[in-house]
Image (cartoon, rainbow, N blue to C red; front, side, top):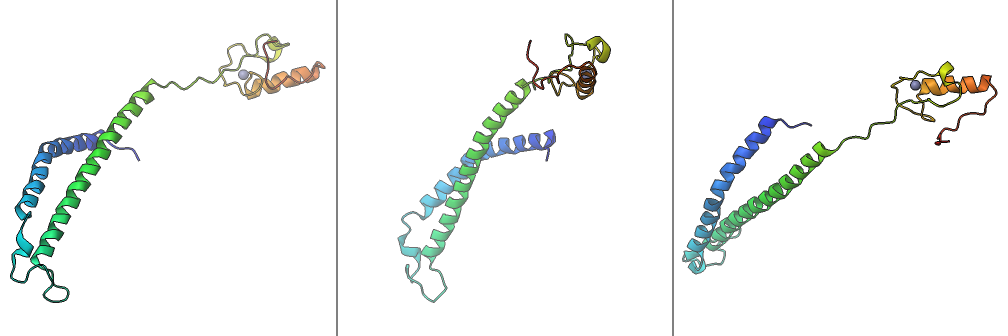
Length: 160
Ligand SMILES: [Zn+2]
């Protein structure tokens, strides 16, 4: 799946908004936590114990809400960390991708081989697959050598 530049710009904009809002989110959590911190035993007459089965006390409700907020903030912080680290890695990968040139495969070149002027083409631009020759010229060379009583050309042709 390829991602569009528009989607990336949109994400960059959202990150910009998040960067501006992050302190507000953190401050909200800290403020809410401080607001209920030291709240005496649930602040109801019933105290911290359950009144009926399945019914939560005020203390339990506060604890659950605070836990939800804390979990939400942790999710935000952890996710942003992943985004920051991953973005740095992707940026490095992009720089590396642009700097990588694929090695050009060697081209067919039979110059210097026996009978080349009979079976070869000096400017053949096909990729070399066997003995430095393209498939067609390897076969043409093979037939020429066979017809002239020469041994089969080594697949990996040396400089000799
Ligand atoms: Zn060729």
